[in-house]
Length: 122
Image (cartoon, rainbow, N blue to C red; front, side, top):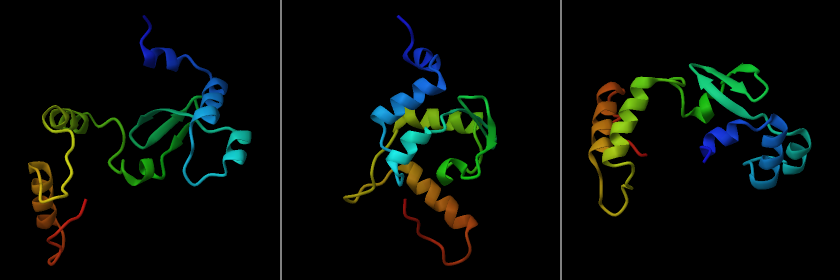
């Protein structure tokens, strides 16, 4: 049996665009115009760079929509995430609950932010 990711990696840009147009609703987009022009299909990232399915290399000026500001391919961050995902991948902080990663990050942020910035919302 072929690995699903391996099978998908064999698609051409045209194949990806057709599947995208058939099944994906893009936020804040004129879907008709987008589907006529076709999406840019991002397939790889490293550091501050992205590559599309046609092999074009571009700088990710939006930092993955502002959530990858330390760059792509950071093994130490992937390793830390892996360790945390094994223990507690997610839990909300509603209804009087919390968890050590939120507590620790909040305390660390309080140490490095200007005086008076003592509370953080995630």
